[in-house]
Structure formats: structure tokens, C-alpha cells
Amino acid sequence: MKNYLRIHPEIRHALEYGQPVVALESAVITHGLPYPENVQLAEELEQTIRKEGAIPATIALLDGFIRVGLSAEERERLATATQKRKISIRDIGIALTRKEAGGTTVATTLHIAHQSGIKVFATGGIGGVHREAPFDVSADLPTLAKTPLVVVSAGAKAILDLPATLEVLETMGVPIIGYQTDEFPAFYSRESGLPVNVRAEDPKDIAAIAKAQWECQLNNAILVVNPPPHETALPRAAIEAIIQRAVHEALDQGIRGAEVTPFLLARVSELSGGESLKANLALLKNNAQLAAQIAHHLYIPRPLYSV
Image 1 (cartoon, rainbow, N blue to C red):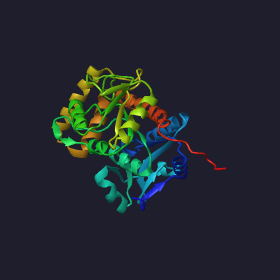
Image 2 (cartoon, rainbow, N blue to C red):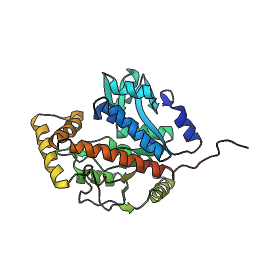
Image 3 (tube, rainbow, N blue to C red):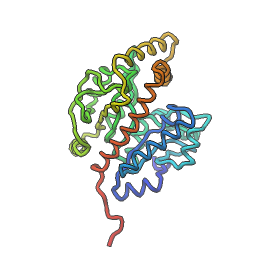
Image 4 (cartoon, one colour):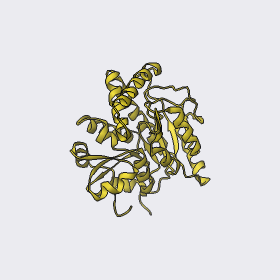
């Protein structure tokens, strides 16, 4: 990967001297929001991490290279590109050789962050097992099983089959830590009725669990589930009815594969009068903040100058 990897000097310096770094995906920029809201969100997520004393590392593909950390100009180009690809693991080689602009998914961001030496990653919600299509399993899950990072999310996207997703995570040995919660959040909602493996009250405790797991040569991710903020979280029953309607519409229209998630997220936003989008944006910032706090306990600072 070193032939394609381009790490921003600020991030390279931070990693060299043991300063906390938090990875961010870029599919939310390329496929999550329209312009200019996508750029604004990307900037706000990075600012949230900086306010906690950590360095943000937004990961994307541009000009035949893997970018770990984007300049303002690169972020603008990514957001406004007319031809852009949503980059899952299978797409990396294709996008690099064709010099495509690409927004990275959870799986791809995880892989690149690990190769870059980053230990913490903040996202919105992971992928999982799709409803009405149990054979449709996101590449996020097997990548979580083999990539030693702390991943902070609001659970899995609520449009998915959450019980089935948790079963796959259990099979793959991915521990699920609830941050100040005993319950797996349902992305837009704070509750799902599904338990987590353990509850942690503070970021230091989460970091300690991660270190112990990895010191035992268990190279899986530590999935931290962080409920969305109270003020923007949606009632589970109300949003579930909307999701079920959107899922049935997708089936009726023959929408399959990679097109399912974008369709469902957009349709849920429409049917909820924009409330699901508001919840999504709030939980992204909430997760970025927690990830930065955890990162402080996973890096060992080195002196900037030797005597």
C-alpha cells in the first residue's frame, strides 16, 4: 500500500510523536449529503475532534492515491466531483488505477486507518445484515473481525436487521461496548431491546479493554456503541414504522445491492420530514467527540525534541 498512501504531514507528525489521531470516513461526503452541506459536515466533524485535542484524519481516494487527511482544496474537490465512487474493500484497486474520486466506507476506512497506524475511527453507523435479504451482508462485518481499531458508532444503521447483525458480530468475535448504556442503540434511536457485551462509563475504560484484547493477539475491532444525543434521538416505534415502509418500497421497486442503503436512508429522511437526517448529523458529531476522548488513552506521547 505504501506506493499509494499519502499521509498528510500533520497526521504523520502526530503519529510519529504519539499524539491522538481519529480516522473519519468520506462516503458521507461523496454520497451522504448534497453540496455544500457535505463540506460543512466534514469541516464540523474535524473541528469536533480538534476541540478534544486530537487530530482528525479524513480518508479518501483522489488522483490515484489514498489520502489520509485532506486539505481544504482536496475536500472541496471530493465533494464536488461529478464522477465519484463509493469505495468498499473490493473497489480500492479499481479506483486507484482509474484515478477516481472515492468516498471510503467503514470497511475501507478501517483497513486504511490500520495500515496508517491509526487506532481510533469515528463513524455514524456500521453496515450489517439487510432486512428481507439475509444473504446481503456488509463488508464492514468481516473487516471489523480482522482489524484492530476502536470503532465508535451509534450501532448499526437502523434500516438493517439488527438482531442478525449482532449474531454475525458475535460469530466473528467482535466485542460490543456500550458507552454509558446497557442497550445496543438503533442508530436514530437510543434503544433497540438488544444487549451489549459490556457497559463502560468512561473513555479510559474503553481504551483499557482495547489494549487488553490486542495484547492477547486478538486482532479484531472493538465496537463502541454510543447512543445518539437525547435531544435529536427519535422514538423507536415511530422510526421503525417509517423504515418498514421504506423497505417495502425498495422491494417493490426492485432496488438491490449497493443501491439499497442510499435509497432507504433518503426515503426515511423524506418520510420523517428530515428528522432522521437531523439525528444522523448529531450522532456523527457525538461519535467524533467520544472517539477523540478515547484516542487520548491509546497513544503514548513522545518528546517532541530530544535533549
